[in-house]
Amino acid sequence: MIIIVGLTITSCDIEGVKTSDEKEKQAAENDALVEEMKSDSLSQQKEIVIDKASDTLKLNNGITITYFKKGKGEKLKKGDVVMIDYRAKLEDGTIYDGNHKVKKPSIPFLVGWNQQTSGWDIALQELRVGDDVDIFLPAKFARGKNGIKGIVPPNANNILSMRIVEKFKPTATVDGVKIWKYDELKTPGDSIQPKDDVLINYWVSSESKPRYDNSYQRGEPFKLKIGDKNIVPGLHKALISAREGDRLMVFIPAKEAYGNDGLIEMVKPGEDIFYDVQVAKVE
Image (cartoon, rainbow, N blue to C red; front, side, top):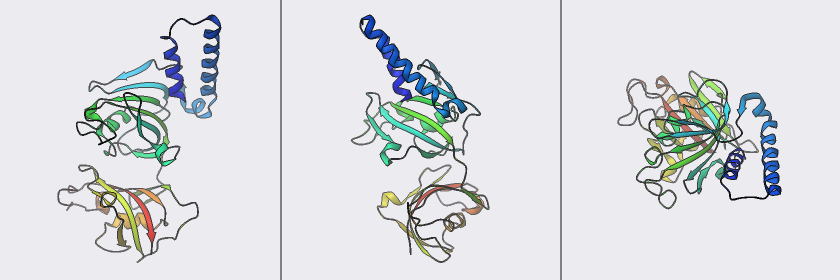
């Protein structure tokens, strides 16, 4: 709604000649929408309202951030997990991705870990909680020369309409392993116990190699036994507090992952890793 208001106000300035009554009616509608934005409790507590999209930040790399609202506080930094409400669009306005696809008002995002294309991490580290923006991403910082077949053309610039809702604090921390639970079944599933067999869907990244393993690409969940020494300790520590149906984001420090040995071509010695896990079934 905030973005629509900005575009509506801007478009009024470039339309053809209107009658006095039409202008008054349009002005009244705009004023009503702006007042609705101002009345939002989040706006009053955390944000500075900007009536139209007139405040922009242009980075040297071609990424441009247009502000509709400005938040307060420190800029986001690498390692922060934030809840975002977003739409990813082509320049013609076609929306091809967003949290609405999974029917969620917002979803978690880990800043600085290549969870999406590089332009996301560059732009988000310029933002604050409460910011409501359009982010113009040149193609090389979006989907690049490959695009996404049938969805994003090759070498297409992208626009992200995004609101930074809040920072998402870990649900639990165990021996340096940080766990964020961000979804669960309406009726809680079975709790995971020691020696249980658990089926999980997941992707995992190191700082140097995004999504180096991804069960979704294989088309079937991965089966593990809690306590199996072939599984990194940090993942066990995260799963033992989970239930069937839970979705977790898990930051695992190197000492609870592959330590000083690393994992050939995937995890460098001393590197931390990050999982996004869905507990599919507990047996």
